[in-house]
Image (cartoon, rainbow, N blue to C red; front, side):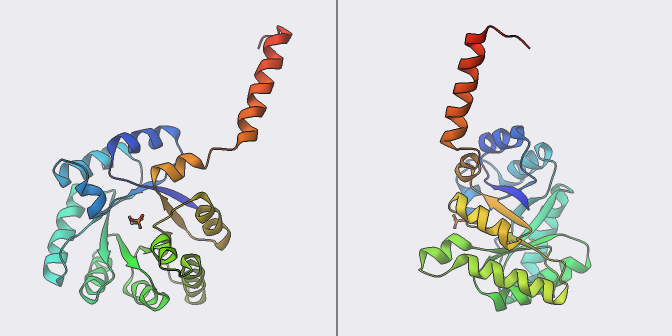
Length: 216
Ligand code: G3P
């Protein structure tokens, strides 16, 4: 399973990229709005740094404007994946963008039938929002399971990109289900490294080594 970082914060992106574990970046308008700088410059900087797909979202909701914004975003870098909301006009644009060879990430997927439509439109990535479903008392992971099943039933090439990840168990469950990608907030990514027995075990090894006087 590929791991993307869900962030528009350059300091987080630089740190995660330095760990060598992330395969790409996803942003959304809310994350970008937290950064006090022009969107195109921010996205270009992310693309320069990260060797992998970088999702940048359109904010138009009508077909012509979505296409215009999509082409503008696509011009920024070869790394750009155009993120498009799962609405009728959005999927119409995804169908055309797919024909033009422009990669897309269909976002705000909360239901398997919506996902089926996005796959049929030729989405490169499809983003089910797990955490937001859980927040409503629904089973976000069940959606990932259903989408993965649909993808394999019909051989769709769309990558299932689990989004709105809240905690490490979401990541584990997505990998067991067989999601293609999970996009993680920085805090969740960092927490994947942690276990208290790793810390105490390392401290013990180093203490014993120090006391022995051995050298490498
Ligand atoms: O970027 C899309 C998604 O990951 C948003 O997550 O935490 O705002 O539900 P969240």
